[in-house]
Image (cartoon, rainbow, N blue to C red; front, side):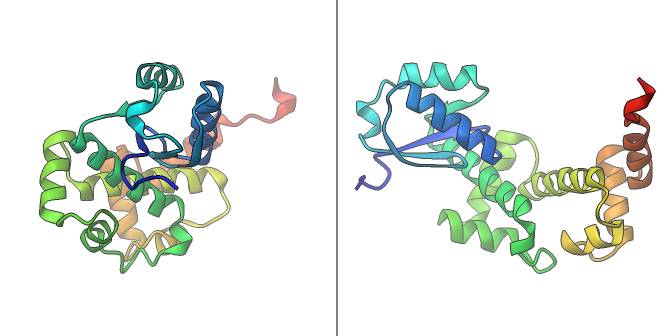
Amino acid sequence: MPMEGKNILYIKNMVCPRCVKSVSETLTKLNVKFYSVTLGEVVTEKPVNELPLDKIAEALKAEGFELLESKSAKIIERIKVELISVIQNYEKFNLEAFNISNFLKEKISIDYSSLSALFSKTEGITIEHFFILQKIEKVKELLKYNELTLSEIAYKLGYSSVGHLSNQFKKVTGMTASQFKAEIQNLRKPIDSF
């Protein structure tokens, strides 16, 4: 089994299961053996310093990913991956009671004020704002599916009310959720109209 930390590649821009599959396939083509691939991390059989990092970085870049080397970049990516994972798996969390600082402190084992300062300095936005942006992207996705009402979406994503969700949605996107939904409907055309 690998030595903790010595056998981990940190990869930026992994945000979904397709990314995991793509990175797995890329590493397999390069004959890089690994134990697991998850969002943002690959646990390799060999220590990282024994791997062809230049080739790996080049192949990952061609797929839209970035191999991270600095400790700060790894921490920033870990924050993003953890928060994106919460939003993607929102059904497993009580988002109304969700506490970002406690969650990240537990997941990353670094005090939240340090994480927050590093993230804001590097990304130009707060961790909280990043989390809000991810929630709004999930709202857009759920609106596109057209399976849930805005009220149900607000409840599932931890908003205190539909009004709160609507205000945040408009602030981030510049349009109301209703306008967004109408725009999606206008883009869809029946197959017989072509």
